[in-house]
Length: 78
Image 1 (cartoon, rainbow, N blue to C red):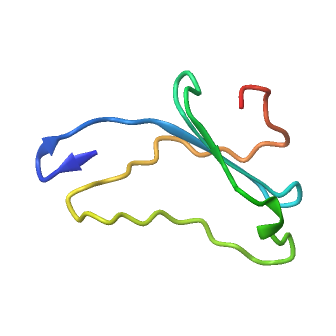
Image 2: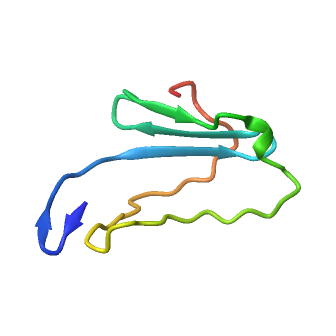
């Protein structure tokens, strides 16, 4: 993340979303050392048209998306 022109840290994470399987997981990369998931999968309604976005609380921070993939199935890493 960046604050002005000063780098305060770099963090990588992976987000997995599968609406039909009611799956939402976020993991720290590269080793999946911390994994967070939805507390109640029934909060996901596959019939709803969702939008994916990031919100940043501090104007000095920045999120850069390096890659985005749509896959047919997830690997067993997470």
